[in-house]
Image 1 (tube, helix red, strand yellow):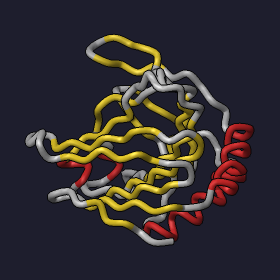
Image 2: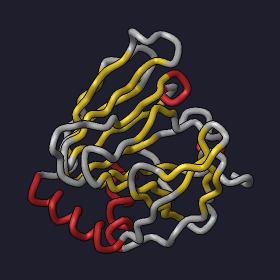
Image 3: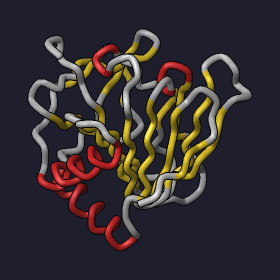
Length: 197
């Protein structure tokens, strides 16, 4: 597997093809069957709303995650996710202990602008984003200098690695699309640092 560096000022972002289309379809089927998908609610601008996608927080027992003022207790690892965790940890040079699983059912499902910069992720987290299913647009924009940014298409079987100051300086999203697109499973592997770490 070869990493392609994405040119982005003061960021550390790279993209690679984790597996071919046939293997990616196999992973998609396993993950969709094993993951206990849920429609989460998050707090946004003082009110709770349903997330425009299905998701599930999975990880080690102590990998508790707080996002958008909501506390998520991890579900146990599935067999497919354990295999992927080992591979992605090795490829990215980080021992991931958790993964946020997202299912984008069609082009109406999305992820708004945000940074993965919660305190339990540490000051310069490594985030590994693994994609199976339909290709979707992924945008990165500098928090202060909007002219700095990049648009990528995350394809079936692709692996995106974000590290260094990327989360501190940039935000990212997966916008809605009117195009007819099939479902997509996105796995964002992270390392949660417990208070004792």
